[in-house]
Image 1 (tube, rainbow, N blue to C red):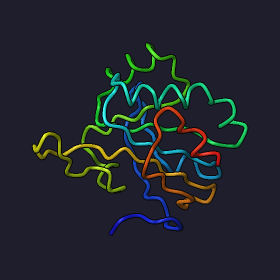
Image 2: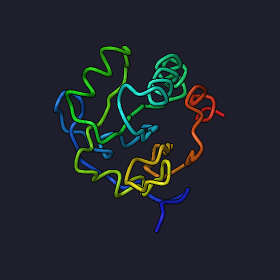
Image 3: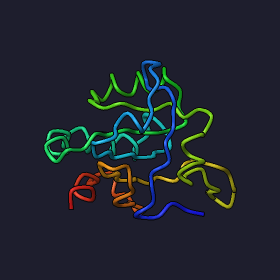
Length: 149
């Protein structure tokens, strides 16, 4: 069953870009923007990450911590962070553990070819660990305004 607003956000434990273990439970008491994106260094994903970077101070002032999730590995995340000067952590969900828990590993279709990939989606989680909002139609160039609405 798909996660819905009001549900408890599923906890997870994976490594970030530096190989440090990260779990959602360590953010208890803070608001978290958990955003899923397909690939590092692709046009849409870069636009989304840079929009969050450019508005990071506003997001922090509103109490949000940002966690980006893709199936890319730690080395790819490190390059992406360095190239785009991202101030937040990127999680290396290479085993698709978080994707499975949040229902973001889905069948996609391009030019009639079906394949499995990441559904670009953002989960806004409140201080108590509950899903406050789910942004299904992410505007990559204006994502912050969707979060802070």
